[in-house]
Amino acid sequence: LDERALLAIVREVIGREQTLDDCAVMPFRDFWLVATTDMLHLTTDFPREMSDWQIGWMSAAVSLSDIAAMGACPWFMLLATGLDRPERLRGILNGARDCCVRYGAELVGGDLDHHDELTIVSTVIGKVERERVVKRSGSKIGDSLCVTGTLGCAGAALAGYHEFDHNLFEPQPRVEEGRKLGAAGVTSMMDISDGLALSLYDLSEANTCGYAVSSSRIPVPPGVPAEVAEECALYSGGDFELLFTCPPGRLQQIDIPFSVIGEVIPGPQVIIDGRVIEKRGFVHMWRDQGQ
Amino acid sequence: LDERALLAIVREVIGREQTLDDCAVMPFRDFWLVATTDMLHLTTDFPREMSDWQIGWMSAAVSLSDIAAMGACPWFMLLATGLDRPERLRGILNGARDCCVRYGAELVGGDLDHHDELTIVSTVIGKVERERVVKRSGSKIGDSLCVTGTLGCAGAALAGYHEFDHNLFEPQPRVEEGRKLGAAGVTSMMDISDGLALSLYDLSEANTCGYAVSSSRIPVPPGVPAEVAEECALYSGGDFELLFTCPPGRLQQIDIPFSVIGEVIPGPQVIIDGRVIEKRGFVHMWRDQGQ
Image (cartoon, rainbow over all chains, first blue to last red; front, side, top):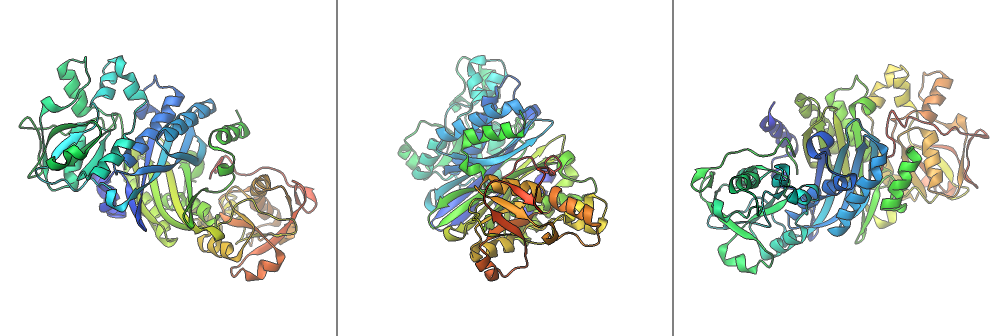
């Protein structure tokens, strides 16, 4: 049973629609609630140099990023913590709480357990006005393909460029940016947790179109050799920037910094400078399949 | 750092109020949302004889039981699954989904990961009308102390009385009962996940009163020697019945089966037949500190 087979089982049991987006969505009166849960554990998700505070921060950030990708406001978080060593608790909780406070969420509860391997599951519920929700589906041929921030910084840190360690250890979910993009009427959006290449393939799966990227337009970490920088931006995880599409005529309504890196094209292919992009990324280092 | 010290840290970081109940509560217009998350893993939570379907069912049931204990309606569930063997996925998801369907919730999403030890975190969000929410605090001196169902059945199964295996492997959260108890105006409520004794101490902590139990009034598993049955009811986990208090004059408004097992008394003590009840239970077999 490979990853694709596992996903097929998930879709069979809970329905395909709910598995296509960064969050599950529940219509509720004039609002939608959006909900996401992420399981992280020591050996595959937290580089050894991370402090407990950073582990808590990151656990919160990955879920807040999923909320951001829907154009939603984070509301509250639950944190289930399986501790390998009890003395880690304070640092982890403080890090998660500080990340929540920074992005307008409240850490309201959780569960506490002993676990041989440190395991943390963060769950965040957010709210979004019905007309501002952004899904992965919705890309239209001719839309501009855009990203927030710089891609590959976390990957550059992993590759030894330690000036980017803070990007790897203390990722900043694009919550305010997601809200503004939702308000500006972008047509589709997701967060980039496992590298641009895999995200483009995920986006393509939720749509019936393809994407064409110009490598020269991708914002990459400064001071890193061009080849390394492109490798990190395309195939490395941990950045949590937002990838979105927007009609060219609406781009100037977006009042946050962003970069146009390509456009939406017919057909399902994902190409860069005319070549098909390799479908690989940091799935095992980071997450296999998250919402 | 013992369990008490860990709980003190949790309360310092997220606030005492939110840690006293089975769920965190978020006021939302005329409703309250209630939210709970529970981490379960193979070595400490799932007896070896359980099927994958039962593991999924139980993972959902423990969280649904927390929702029930607030008098709330389950709404939706997220399930984060760290799989030791991928072929378990279908059974686990089916079990969780079937338990959700049975109790009116929807399994809407989750996360999927590899884990050396099978680890499942279920998160449930529920809704309750403001006037029907029941908290752990609210016991009044003179109230009757009551329980739903029979206590100690899951423990009897663990003790070798296999006619109760279904109670251990497929616990039934008291969702309908919790709703009716909320409507009837019971004064305080919680679920009994780690035995009656620990639950009474937890209830006492959230109140300023004590509880006096008559052992002869506790409904225990039939066909089990009296001593074993009482031991299981008081000190064994896995039953997920509801423990609640209610003014005697309001008992007849409760239209579900229940047993009066004692009353609310002044002072913080928890006593049975005039003696102080031992403060022990299945904390390590089951859960250390859950919401």
